[in-house]
Length: 110
Image (cartoon, rainbow, N blue to C red):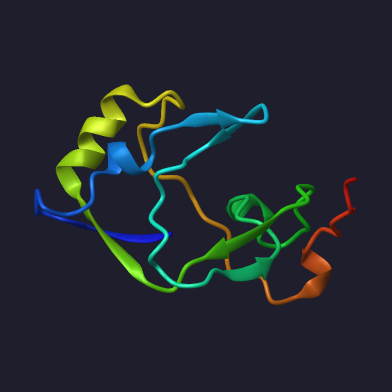
């Protein structure tokens, strides 16, 4: 999901969107909006800038919905104070990888 932070209390509440539940033993965010378009799936991972010039060992794909969600910036501040992941700052991101040699092969899991 792509979000833009806005100073608008009527915008989406980040704490509500990211509320967690456990589904089949995995954390899930059931309140993610479903009106942001069909996901576009990319090969590779968002493992961080340490893997810009070498393959990431993590076998993942990622997807992004094409529409942008406006999120109330104050709700993000509130979420940061009590999130279970102890997130408190932005992280580096991996460059868009276009060289297939830098993508990890994904093994099918049954």
